[in-house]
Length: 113
Length: 113
Image 1: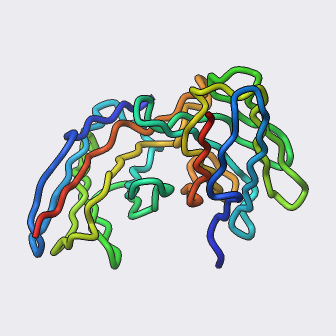
Image 2: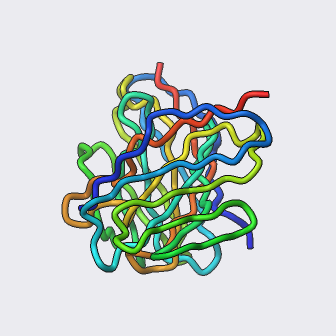
């Protein structure tokens, strides 16, 4: 099976812009979660989508949003970018249950100038 | 929410066996223990998962004592390419009530020639 794929792998934006990141889960996986990873904060959970519905949400401002399509692919959007949004954004998929193993994608490295 | 404690860093030499221990005193009855490996600027990679006793796969072994309050990841005959951060995860990858990631700070393993 193909793994989790994320596009683009690298992105450079300027403050105030918005960005959309894409994630394709492993075939058959219906849950997609997003994480932000920075050197100072580690892996922080953003949100999880399951069957096109947001199932769980982390403690991030409303500038961070996401959605999931009927084929389980997911997108994450960040509006009004700030310098502090520079990070590695990771997508992870799993079959469905909360205890199922998550498999991560390679990440999208976002740099905000 | 099961909090995990791991050593911040460990050093080893090529060809040695490495054991990384994770403490999780308040593990819940239905929690599984999962270990991930992460290289810089890449997503965490699933290594192994277990519930009790011993689990072995082609990459590592996981030892879990009867009380399940700790677990040990064993990497046989490490090589330079095993230099990475290793995360111990107990239960779900995030707290479904608080929306917080349950990934800790991980253990940075450095393998020397």
